[in-house]
Length: 407
Image (cartoon, rainbow, N blue to C red):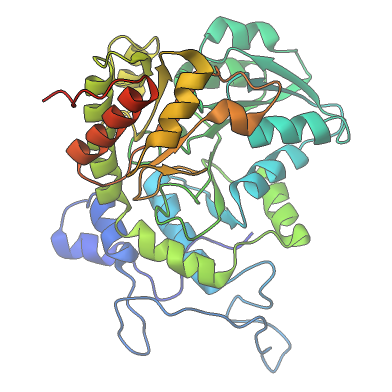
């Protein structure tokens, strides 16, 4: 696997100039201090070439040979994500979050046992149900917010991987990462954390003991709903990490350079967007918790949330940009509410600068653990008052009430 250092990038240069350690927000904004050596541009160039000239001795002194396993623009974005996650072994970008997740499970050996959460991204849950048997993997799903349930599912000498997702989509359950890491490591297994809904702005799983962290970079890392991407970051380089890198190269699953270029653009403002979206989500959660047509608000920042204490311990800078509401009137009330919004967009995905609403049970279909009265909300960067008023009128319209929003 290639090193994460990017040519002509000196992430320590600006730190030396400041003579103090710099915050991730500063390093992200400055793209790790990258200055193009040819033009002195402060924005790195886009490298589209699929092939590279050999040296006279038939070697590749540049470090690049062909675009399927490696690309300089991809390395740029990987370096910033690795910095944000504190990933000593670096990061690997994939063509989607599913490609990144599938690479992890495909790197296991036939017969390996894995533990996953009951509440998790539905696409991965479905993929495991379809592909797990073909890969000869044994998969147990547990209530991962209960450390005792994870411990009870471990099989000595067989469990090789524990996969958790926190906050867990779409109920936003919270798993204690440090506790899960201790349980996994005691059994000789690795812990992988899907931290898509937390983002490195809120949680750094590797610092809490995880071995790998995964993101659907399509979501808040990119944040503009114009790139599909996934990423893995590792605490240490080992044979398993090398196997994942080999799978990416062999499958041709690397992210394209243009998408990496757009992602790099977005990473420079990621901390600002994450802070704004989190503030909006927290304000909405507080107000919606008092709404007459909302029965439950699921948001880890509320003291009423079952995982609030754990979230407060392991999350920084707030509790994330995602929340869900359960609507009075059951499924019909929820569907009617989603149909009545004007500002919120009825669309799949999350983490973009535009706010999205979705009736998840309809999307996930039979077997979904998602309650039929639940609406998932991804908070963007719009004015919170505007977002609340739109939800309020939609909730009231769905229930035949034309009253105005609360102050």
